[in-house]
Length: 112
Image 1 (cartoon, rainbow, N blue to C red):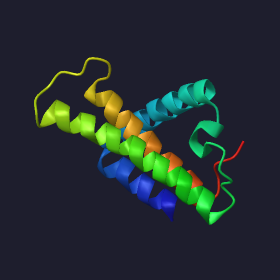
Image 2: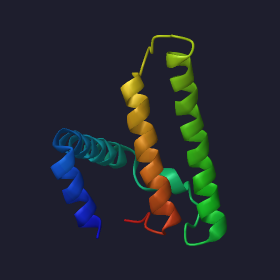
Image 3: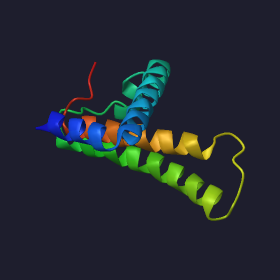
Image 4: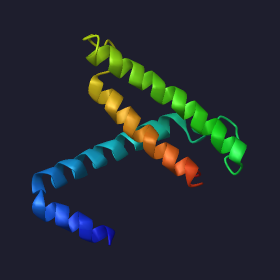
């Protein structure tokens, strides 16, 4: 069924389909690059992700990271500031990847 939706979107909105697909590829490349730099344990920080407590700990840490990104987003957009180290696009990319990491943890898939 999933494929049917994708094919329908591809037919009805080919530019949107291609653009979304390209962004997903960019996101995955960025994820791979950063994951190789940081390693898998930077998310779990030693917690056992096989337990509810370990998952909650990791998800709580990710919430803080995402909150930092949203705070930057607020400063860049609402307060009309210029980013010194990261662009608004960097913020969107980080939030997207953190969201996927949250899903991987929640599904018990954050492992080597």
